[in-house]
Amino acid sequence: MSGLTKVLVANRGEIALRVIRACFDEGVRSVLTVSEADRDSLPARTADEVVVIGPASTSLSYLSVGAVVSAALFTGCDGLHPGYGFLSERPELAEACARLGVSFIGPSGDTIRRGGDKIAARELARSLGIPIGAGSGAITDVAQAAAVAAEVGYPVLLKAADGGGGRGMLLVGSAEDLPSAVERAGAEARAAFGDGRLYVEHFVDDARHVEVQILADAHGNLVHLGDRDCSYQRRYQKLVEEAPAIAVPAPLRRAIAEAAVTLMRALDYVGAGTVEFLVDERTGTFSFLEVNTRVQVEHPVTEMVTGIDIVREQLRITAGERLSITQDDVTFTGHAIEFRINAEDPYADFAPSPGLLDVWLPPAGAGLRTDSHCHPGYRVPAHYDSLLAKLICHGADRAAALALATRALDAFRVEGVATTLPLHRGLIRHADVRAHRVITRWVEQTFLPAWSRGLAHAAPAQESH
Image (cartoon, rainbow, N blue to C red):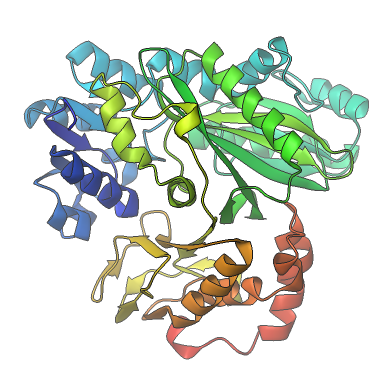
């Protein structure tokens, strides 16, 4: 049982409900912050208490450090869980909690600052002997970016130093395109993160995106919970994740895990976090990408193959407890695949699809888990991220997980809004997916063009409108 007594859940949607349920399992009372748009949501109905912190606008509600911390103090919370997104990687929130005596369920503000700044994290990795991709530190102008790009070779990626979720990131194929790309990426980074700093990284075309889950307590104990393959991406947004990353050779996976542990120890990390890497399929080498100082959207696939509840471990770590497991205790059973079901229309360039859910019927059965805040009659708001649910399928091996996923996706019924379910149904049947031949550009370059041509007029009515 956690030493915390009352936790403010400073988020919304499926992750808010996930944290609320972990609090219940730990015997901890939960207080949920909501905007006016979410006051009748399923998380709001489930939490022990609810505090309305502002209007639908995120800048006046979920992104307001003052409103969130005030809610924690007003309701007598001794802990605050930020979930993912919103304020989860803002060191100002962790530091405000520390000043006011509220335990932040995550790493310290200093660790968030050092790990979340991608330029600083790259330099730290380099100093530890961890491979980093060819690229630069912070660039100050187009001329500097051009010099780096000429040295490492096109194509290059422009990346926001304080970025995430693909924002402030642009692929540049030639020197002619670089000046406008620097301007656009910098503007997007400033708008999204309040920090326009960019850096340049050589783009690896044949790459897998592999990440390692870490848990660490305040007593010096740190373990990794294996890896995940997150190569199914569109515009740098993850669509599907798998655990473990069995397409990568075992020796390379061990080296990646060791690098993740080394880096997180150097950051004096406490809590749940993830280290992301790029694996070059042509050379069989890996390079460090970034640190995520929070729980990941895709954490359920790791929970399914390890049996470890990552969010409950977060609560216990923050309460000052030691990890309940050692590295030798971590075992892996079977294979898990997660599908992000979004309120987007894949037949209309993934346009957002807010509206009323007339029918919401996720599949149920052995090996299936659906993390969602949705229910029949729920009105999907237009103000927030489009994620409706995460469908997680676990089998004895990858073939069994794929077979279960195929049945589950076919059985998942949604009416009232367009969703990405048709995309996933097509994707899971593709020969490249079955053969595990997916790299980070595969969805955009191989799958989507053919899928769109073949299915453009076959959208099921209940998932289009």
